[in-house]
Length: 108
Length: 116
Image 1 (cartoon, chains in turn red, blue):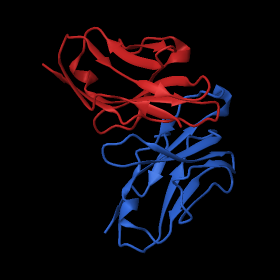
Image 2 (cartoon, chains in turn brown, green):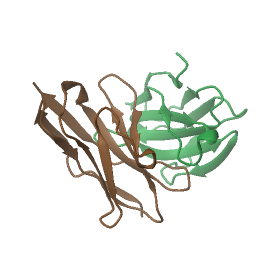
Image 3 (cartoon, helix red, strand yellow):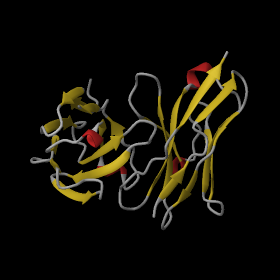
Image 4 (cartoon, helix red, strand yellow):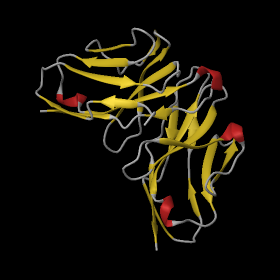
């Protein structure tokens, strides 16, 4: 069965500190990996995808196929990074599966 | 606003009543998805359309749930004989097949259902 685990429900960091959100997945085949984000009072939106190998808003994500992990990192958190973050693998069946999410709070 | 539009945004109903939600995807997006999200959980896949064809339905979608996309544009999600366990946020998302298999999903703001 497909499973996405985000072990931290809540993550609180100080502004300027590094932040890492963990994601582990159990998926048949070789899924593509995404991170979606929901800022306060905004709709769910794509943050970044592994296939693009890009850094968005200072965030990067490392795919480790051996550990089946796709952790999201940012070296210096900003207050505007406070949001709910969802790890989301997608198989070749066009279905995106979401983890339970991690709420990040960046304190001044 | 040319984003994904959902209505109604909020619906309060009594147990046993039928409710219908509508989703208008981004123009020319031929893929349309319905997800359900309950408190403290991530969105759960319900069903998926490519144009007017419903290609997959989750086991979560009981016989009381039906979704349509009659002309390959807007979609409706109907819940018959609602139960309190149906209370959730219902999210619609769309994407363009031209982006390939792993295109970005664009989400609506959701329709929140409360069943009393």
